[in-house]
Length: 351
Image (cartoon, rainbow, N blue to C red; front, top):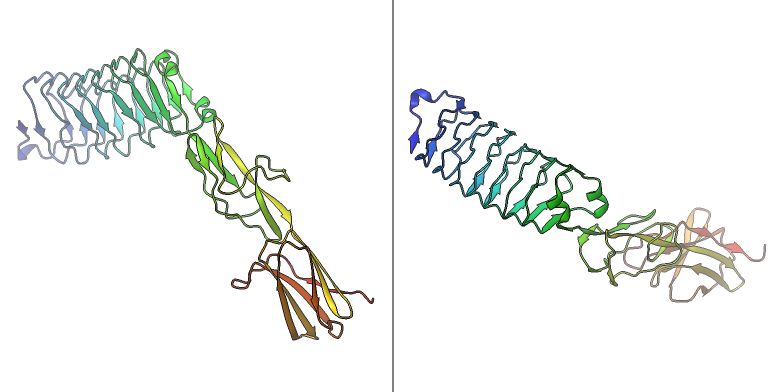
């Protein structure tokens, strides 16, 4: 084990340990901000990266051939990794990525033969030239839609690769730039996310998008739209026919689908007769409340109401002829009294 002496505590660049084959561990000062070119190349007994509290750069071939490293932990402070930094690190089994690293450079993990599963984080934008080439035992890759560039030969000769799990749809995968010499990647089975999205289609309170596979139950959350009745979900934005209902189980097609809310306008009219008020309502939600308010001038004189059923016409008995104005309103129930549409003025049939 090597420990830097206090007189070196101002050291900012670490280097000069090339081919120290007996070196197993090393402690470096907090002042170090960079691991230099080939700093630990050929240190075949080194079992872990030195703790680097504030290091931002790992240089060219810095850990080339460090074959005893099993778990690679890249600190969050690191923003840049040099070409071939971990090439021929044949013992690496797992990689924990720093939060600020967005690019995997050329040849970075070339010939890392113990790497079986590769999981790339959300913040990884690009994979460089032959970054994982000749990783002979790599079978599975997981990557997100944020990775938009896969360089030439990035997975060249990764002949054990069978499965790629991609967090987006096939359409999004088709937009990813994939360079030449990536046959192993392209011949693997690509597992796309199947996405069920909801569009309130002029309303609000649509359910959240769901990423899933195969069968899925349509959300029971009901969207709302003032003046309209929700009839179900359709596959066309302009559809008047509801193809699916909340709670129904459906099988999603490849690439997923978007469901659009189907709305019917609520219509209401009212006419005053000698001994009753006739209210016609179309597309009112079952259990909503018709409220009648009678005014003399600006003074509210009388209120009546009725709960809607499957009927479209409601005959409310009473003398409504002696008021200056009769307003008819529709609410969503007796408890919340949320208006479902604008009120209408009743028409006196004698006029």
